[in-house]
Length: 69
Image (cartoon, rainbow, N blue to C red; front, side, top):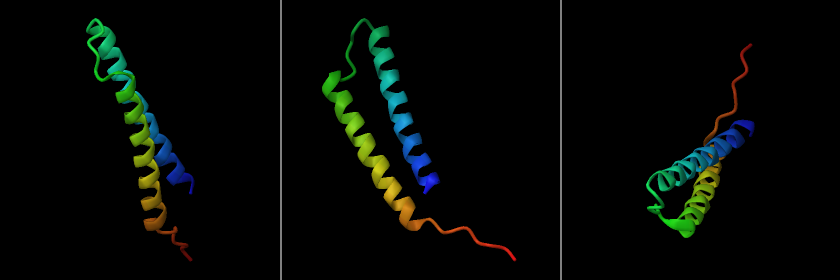
């Protein structure tokens, strides 16, 4: 389950990185908004939903490690 949690956290981190890049792009272009706070909020919400959904799929399809003799 640690690997599934790691995958969720990695997905959330990549989403946060994307939002940071959008923020920097907005600052670099004199406030030309990429989407505003509502857009950022929905991006983060769907990032969490996607990461949790992917973790459910990973948890169900993950095979336990084999033990060699």
